[in-house]
Length: 198
Image (tube, rainbow, N blue to C red; front, side, top):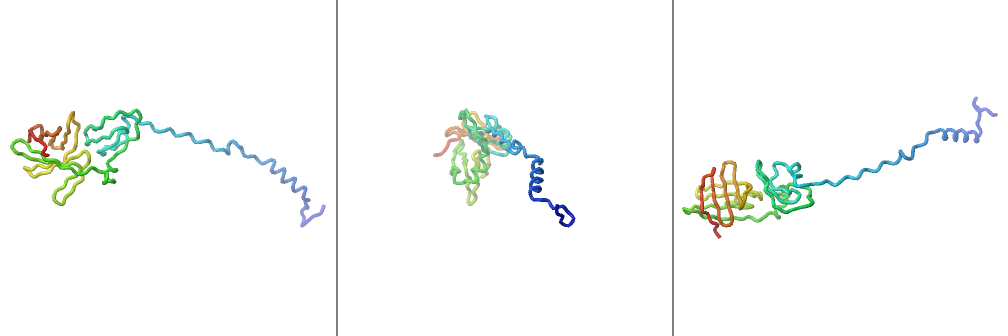
């Protein structure tokens, strides 16, 4: 056997045999371990008539409860439409959507009332306009304008057995049903026998 610089010279067949033996002893990858497990299917969220209570923020005034459109005043019960649903959708607050799409908001409406003793007041829906001032109102709000005292009060809608009722934290209340209305302050009548002017 020939020697190169003090080392035995291995013939080519011997080198190939050595490489084969080393590769045969190396651990082989587990084909099962190389396959990633399939992700478990995500179940669709289920909603019911009470889901909105944990989804809708307390400061949201107008919202979709998954079936009906609702509005509420902080600290009061929510008032909703009464459509029956078998499958509830995801509840969502409608306040931001209305603010982001002013073209979809309802047009401003002003109604006038005349009461006993020629007392007068007006009610603004959706928008309050006075001189160059414009105040956009939520769906659940009105602006009550007293012509006698020349004062304006922003009132929030509250639940009512019939008709519509708006109030503020100071005990001022406006009731309307059809063409008739009543104004009270801390359970005392301010204006009675009020009729809508057309």
